[in-house]
Image 1 (cartoon, rainbow, N blue to C red):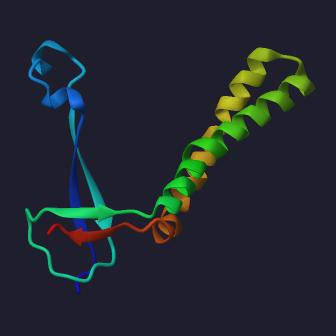
Image 2 (image 1 turned 120 degrees about the vertical axis):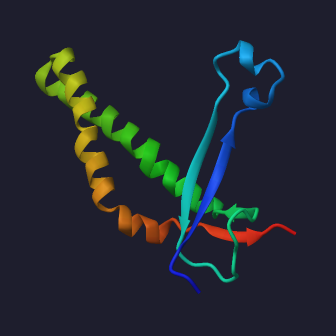
Amino acid sequence: MGTSLIVTIVNQSACSSCHANGACSVADLQEKEIEIAEFRNKYSPGQEVTVVFQESKGFTALFYGYILPFIIVLFTLVVAISVTNNELFSGLLSLVILIPYYVLLYFFRHQLKKVFKFEVEEIN
């Protein structure tokens, strides 16, 4: 069993497979890499696999990535407006408060990798 497996996912929008994608600037094709720490079988380069992620963990990731920051911004905005009565300062403060939040997430990325585990399955 190896230490980790890197799976490349080709993220293709519906526009990139459209016959008129050259006429439109929306077409995009992105490659993303996912590191899978624990896997059972041997896989070879170029082999097609299915990447599995628990739905409940997806909601947790959604909460940490989008919902909690929104709540923090909204709470900071309401408190700052009520304390300072200055909308410009309050708006800037509520956006700047996201910097330490995302820096904190960055520092805890290794612990979050243990929580948010991807699994890989062979395609039959």
